[in-house]
Length: 116
Image (cartoon, rainbow, N blue to C red; front, side):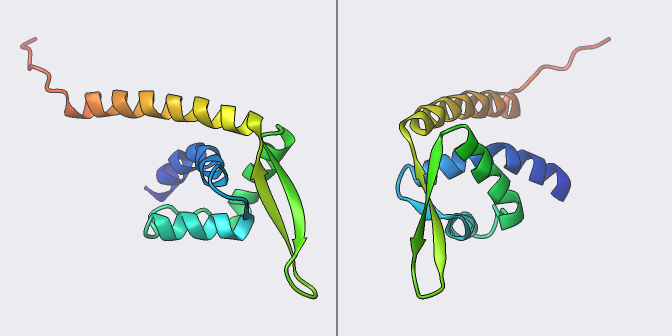
C-alpha cells in the first residue's frame, strides 16, 4: 500500500508546495517539516523527493529562490512563489476540487444490482 500511497502523494506535492509558498517564503527542509507536522505525520515527503519538485517549479518559473545567510556558516535557500506560480496554483486547486468531488460521488454512489 505504501507504494500506491506514495504515487498518489507525489502527484499532489507540487500543489501543496505552491500553497504553502503562497502564504510565506520557506526553505526546503521547512516545507518538508510543515508537510509532516500539519498532516500529523500522514503526509511525509523526504527531502530527496521534495527537492526535484522545487527544482522543477523553479525551472518553470513558478517559484524563485534566494540564498540567505542565517549564521556564520549557514546559508538557507528560501523559495518564493511568483505570479505565474499563483496562476498555476489556481489551476491545480481547481483540478483537485473537480477530481475530489468526482471521487466522492463515486464512493458514495449506490448502484442497483441487476440480474444477468
